[in-house]
Each structure stands twice: as structure tokens, then as C-alpha cells.
Image (cartoon, rainbow, N blue to C red):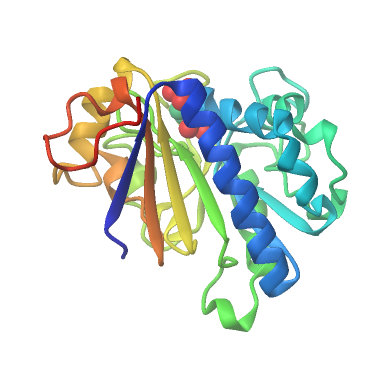
Length: 259
Ligand SMILES: O=C1O[C@H](COP(=O)(O)O)[C@@H](O)[C@H](O)[C@H]1O
């Protein structure tokens, strides 16, 4: 478990641009060290904001997109191409504009009849993760270089919501989620054990509606009540915030935002 490190930016636009720059560097470094890089994407406003900032960054050309593995932390269980699917939104924000290797883009299954329910979809995705894990990963999921998570106003991350069964899962790496309080109610999500297999976990939160969630998760709340509190990386856990989202954090927990 790594101790959370907090970085606060002036506003959400700057936060997105800074996170995109950070991600480009991380991918380039991983590709240079190991030949390829792996990133787990998140949905939501901040995740999509980061992807849009990455699409607009001139330095994006430093990435070899064909040597990047993309996975998802969660998905809304909807038909393929549905505008509310995290995958559809990620494609619009960035993925359709870069030369990815389709074999390395690991979409979570859609509600398309092939997987008749979210539990079957979760099992299929867990099998795909297990097939990609190597002996040096020492577990059933790859050691992702960076796993991105948007933090919801209720402290949910991926589709792990407070008190729902998904956040209590200790064995499976992917679960079907039913009755999510945020629409759509049926989803597929990585579990906390799968999230914690990542080398680095980056949590993104911007806006005053996230301030209470951020303060709760970083002030000792339990992961069942505040799932974001249980999301950490093996080497690094980075909270990337804007000033409004950091407003309720105890003073002294982080250096001031740059003006
Ligand atoms: O529904 C979801 O919400 C969270 C947070 O989204 P935000 O818009 O409040 O930032 C997101 O992380 C998750 O991937 C998504 O499915």
C-alpha cells in the first residue's frame, strides 16, 4: 500500500492538462523501460476531460500508441455504441484519433446478447485479464502502469459504490454491479483487489460537489463507506484535484495550488 500523495491545481482545466502531461510521460517511460505500457481508463467527467486534454496535447505524438494496452476500470452495462458507455465517450474524447492496436484495446463487454447479464460480462473480463497476466505479475491481473479513477460525489470509484456488495469483494477481480445509485443501475467493475494490483493509481476529482467525498476518503474513512479510501497503487497513489475539490481537506495536508 502506498501513502496518498495529493496534488492540487487551480481549476479543472489545468488539472486535466497537467494530468495528461503526466500520463504522456508515464507511458513514454514505461514503453522505454519495458517495450509497452498499460493504462486502465475511467469514465466520468474528469476521466473524459483528461482524455480530451491528451488528444489536444502536442506531446501526444511522443507516445507509441500501437504499444499501449488499454483496459477499463468500469463500464455501464449498455449496448455497444450507447452514448452513455464509458468506452463510447473515451473513443470520442481520444481513442478514435490515435493509432491504437485494436488487439490491445480491451473493452468491457457490452449488453449485446453475447453476454446476457453483467455477471457473465464480468466473468468474461476477468478471464481476459487473467490471460494477459504474466508470471511476474504474481496474480490474476496485469500490473497496470497507471490505473485512472474518477471519484464520484458519494466517494464511489469505478462502479464500486458505498455499502454495495462490489466494494466488499475480496476474491474476484471483476464483478457485475446491480442497483447502482447512479444511472444506469447495471454495471461491470474492477474490484478493489484488482485496482490495487496497479503500479500507480491516480484518482481524479474536480469541482465543489466532490469536496466532501475527497475529504472523507482522505481523512480515514473505511473503504466500505468510502470506496475511494480503498483505492491505492502498489508503488504510488496520486490524488489529482482542483482547488474546489480540495476545499474541505484539512489545512497542511497538501501544498497550496499554483496561482
Ligand atoms: O459513472 C461513473 O462515475 C464515476 C465518476 O464520474 P464523475 O462524472 O462524477 O467524475 C466514474 O469514475 C466512473 O467510471 C463512471 O462509470
